[in-house]
Length: 343
Image (cartoon, rainbow, N blue to C red; front, side, top):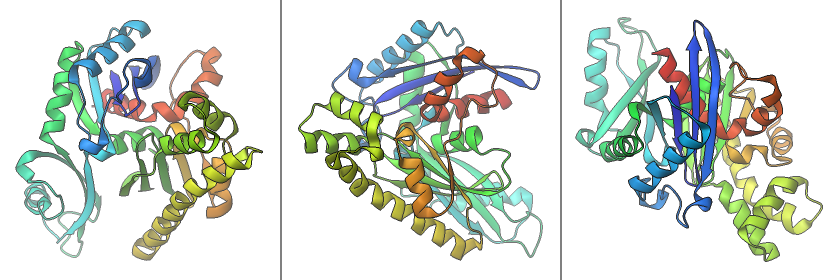
């Protein structure tokens, strides 16, 4: 199965195989929009629609050819700014009533007509059939237009679209599955950031914010009068640990609002559920920013990890260092590919 993550600034593909219970990382590849076009692959300002299905398909085809990926079945992740996630409660009811009740009530919680969206949902609390048990539902809505775009991209790229999935569900599968404790997962992307609460392996809350890793690069470029590429290299090399105040101070000013937002969400979740997430997972391309993990741990007073989405997969040991470095960027693609292998 191939997992494909079409991001704003890059496209990533991961090819996995399964033999019995074991899963193998067969191949992976990435292409950046800056190496092909002046425009990003996805324009979030337009609601996350692809700028050009043709050019995105060509980029995917280039990854597959260069990586020698021959598998055709693919699952595409849908970015958070193209989906709508929410949770709500339903009164006690029998299992055979639940699906219809979710679809009937969904219109109250999503900003688009239900007829124009595809819905996915999970039961995250309560027991159907128990007359004393309210039911908690986690709902994901994807506009049908987005799905049609991805179907077209797959067709142009010569792939068989097996499924589409909200990227947050792929992240949970790749990073948190099997963990019994309560975890706050912060995915810092190029264009947006999601903060997710996962309890006992189940996604309970998901929030999306405009904070973007690209803002950090632009701010360094502006502060030091540098080109984008130079600023990006400085950010990745020095980050919050930089001895140059123009860099470290600029980054702290931008990152502090995100840390405050995480702290607020942790507090709100404790007030609502009586549980306090005891671990923070950082993922996404910006999670490797020097000093970020340590700063989160210091301010939030919690254990902070950058989990490796490839840790349970088989791959040649010689790739170990490279795999660990790129893992945060490939977590979404890996997670949706794993979902395909399990169905």
